[in-house]
Amino acid sequence: MDHETVFVVEQNRDAQMRSILINELEIDPRRLVSVLNYDGFPITADFIIRKIHSHIPQPQNAV
Image 1 (cartoon, rainbow, N blue to C red):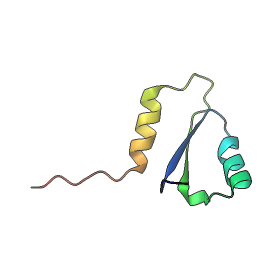
Image 2 (image 1 turned 120 degrees about the vertical axis):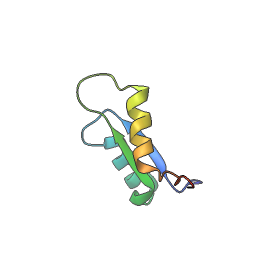
Image 3 (image 1 turned 180 degrees about the vertical axis):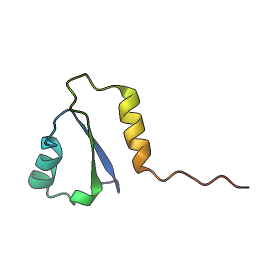
Image 4 (image 1 turned 90 degrees about the vertical axis):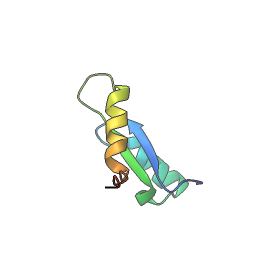
């Protein structure tokens, strides 16, 4: 895998796709970050963006 972190976007409470990727491809679980939405509504781009941003360190503003 070419990237340090890969976000796996899923609409499944059990994060099945992430589990399959870890088990079948033997990927280090620390490299796969689940972006889960399982509230019964379609997932939105805004939800995905907010979840990804919450995992990425934000640069500090210079004073």
